[in-house]
Length: 188
Image (cartoon, rainbow, N blue to C red):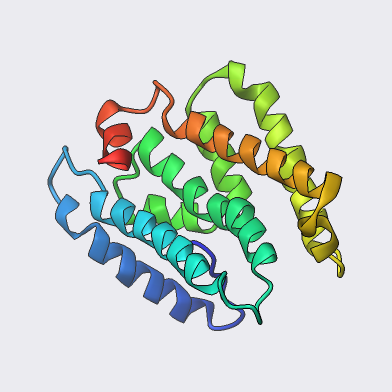
């Protein structure tokens, strides 16, 4: 749901997506207090699985773990938490709403979530995060990406960018405009 786009058979894709989402939202019928906590939990579980898979693979000397580490710190983190933010800032209480969110790219989802916070003070940091992510995409596309990851100035820049990127995500996910019950759910 977070990373898929149909190459063909759009109708079948839509049917499958609807079936999955209807399962997550099956308890919302007639309830004003419905919260998509099972969906939220599964997305968080996906993040934890990505982290565990990375940890298991990074000890394999035949695999380039540094690139996987950088992907985890940027694109994978973005994919997961750009979906969580809109889910908690203004709870998505219908499968139709979530399906529309799934159609957006991770950056579009994050932008949507940041906009829903209604906090103009985030604008400068948001611009910096977009620039950082663009730098990540440049590194990732380089055939010799390992040169950035091994040592020296590039490695420190990547580390610094990853820290700023994750700090921004933490800031928006723990923003006071998000209902306390959702912020608490992310931790407990």
